[in-house]
Amino acid sequence: MKLYRPGEKGHALCETDGRVSTTFRYRDVPFSDGSGVARRILAGVCDRCGKVVSIPPQSTPSIKAARRNAQVPIEAVLPAVYLDALDLACWRIDPDASLESRKPLLMHYLHASAQSKAAIRRLARAAREATSLFAPAPPAGDRKRLSMKVSPAMSRTVERLAEATRLSKTELIKGAIVQIAEDIVGPARPARLEELKSLAFFANC
Ligand SMILES: [Zn+2]
Image (cartoon, rainbow, N blue to C red; front, side, top):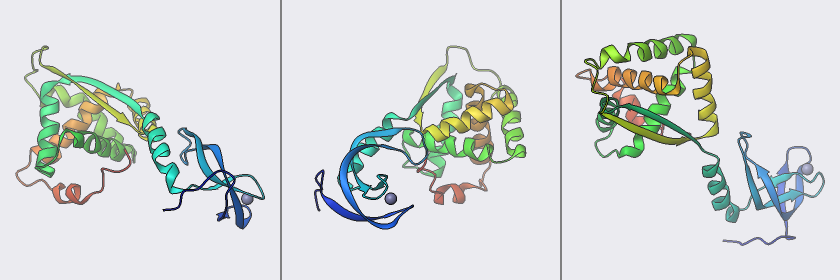
């Protein structure tokens, strides 16, 4: 692979200027979703307008690291039975699944919940009914912490859901787990199993 050096010339497409010559320089490059910045990475800069128009492969690890650092922690302390339900659903979707798949499954449900008013209502109802579904209420001691780091975009989705439903993030997570349990754990033949198996929901969260 080619290792680019600062000052070296290249070619790329610039949104403003079309096909242009570029010069590689170290620049702070904002993420496309505006959620953060990768600092001092080598980038191809348009010789006409000075905008960053290309990123060489050697800068990818730094961008990935910067993206990881931009992730937002989400924490909830839940009765342990919720996490058991979530883990059972993950296991049912993929028996080889690890605890890592908790987050994508949860985020898939929260993201889907944000897509329509009806979906938001269903989530809010599930969150409010949560205690009765998992009744009798487990002893207060049997609680577990769920810690995840999500993308800034996903974090904003959760904030919007919290605003729309006036529920806390913990309650939203409970609501999502109730839905997951209804869809995947409860039924003898879960209707959405194949869809969830084939879904590329591991990206983007
Ligand atoms: Zn340009």
